[in-house]
Image (cartoon, rainbow, N blue to C red; front, side, top):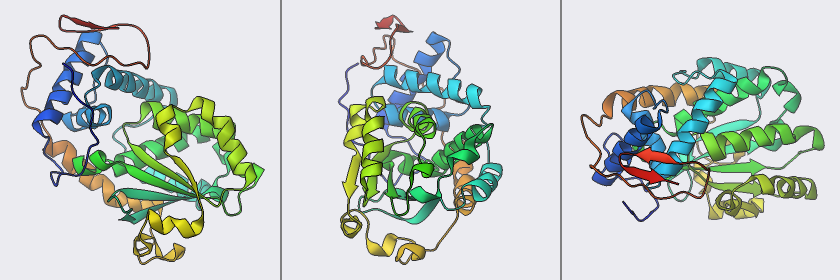
Amino acid sequence: MQMERRESVALGQPHVLTEEEARWCVELRAALKQAGIPAPASDYELAIFALVGKADTAKSVQRVTRFNATVAKHGLDVRSDGAASGAWGLEFLPDYASPSVGVDREGRPFFYIRGAGMTPSNLAGDGLSWYAQLCLDATNGVNCDLDRARTGYTCVYNCEGVRPRHMSMAVSMAEAELFQNALPVRPKQFLILDAPMLVRGFVKLMKPFLTQKMQSRIKFIRSDELTNYVEPSQLARRFGGAQEDITIAQYLERTMPRRHQSIEAVSLGAAQPPPLLQARHSSAGSGAIFVGEAELA
């Protein structure tokens, strides 16, 4: 079944799937079952993967597969309430991520990242798995309802004070693995403020490991250009805006209950896939996925 890919937008239906979205979900569920791949535990969690992949069922299957592998690799808790990872973040990366209660000019939630707040040495040993759990929980907070999942999010990266000790290929590769290939989330913009040559050079080193789509969403801008993307009033007070300052732990505490409501509210019921299900071919990945009578190369 060939379907045109379109940008998802907030529909004012945080717990209701459109007919087209429900079809994506049903097709993904059937494809996962036929391929013998464990499906997400709830219809809501399945729907998030379907929304990210849209009409490309093969691509969604690949993301679920990679997600499952990442969960196993790091021992992640997919039903975490964020309390433990939030506390870890406050202890080991206290000045790194500042979630915003505001939105950008496209109505998307955004994270304000202080590059100098990253301490790669704190991610040694099991620290990287704790960081992966924090990223998963933050993703679940961003995807706390269907409308939030439809819009995606923006990341603002402040380069002030960044030094070589704040940067790590191992950490950045782990982030690329998580956000580009595994976690069901839609990063729409990555705005890098006032990037010095150090940061520009590091991004250049990372580009071969990023998809063309991800590369296209990285933008180097000046601080005085940020208002083209985010209304000043939508920034937190600590960054000169009018919004409440909150920590990553507070963000998770506020968004996770809504996510749990979404898990309870969204249901596909007994919806069945069409007799002959054909998903769009995906250029990413290899092998064949059998869906009903159709084979996807």
